[in-house]
Image (cartoon, rainbow, N blue to C red):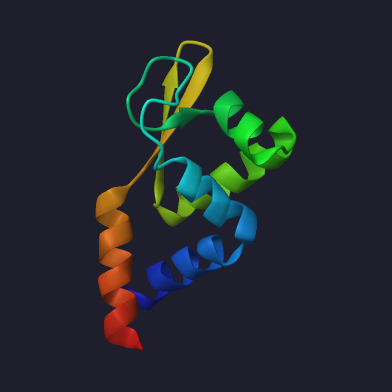
Length: 97
């Protein structure tokens, strides 16, 4: 992982709200559109108690950092954690510190 990638992820996970979103995305079976893992945007809104534009802002940062993967399903955007990227981040952080 490059230093730039590491910095981008550190910036993304430094925010407590984004950490709460990542934690919520670990939930199994909580998605209102029937997915076993991940949540749609409205599910995230309900769990985090923030407006849709605020959630979209946070999801864009997490997506750009590569720790969340979005997928458009009809009218819904469904998000799931990128577990491989999060593991790689953990290893890179451990090596760099």
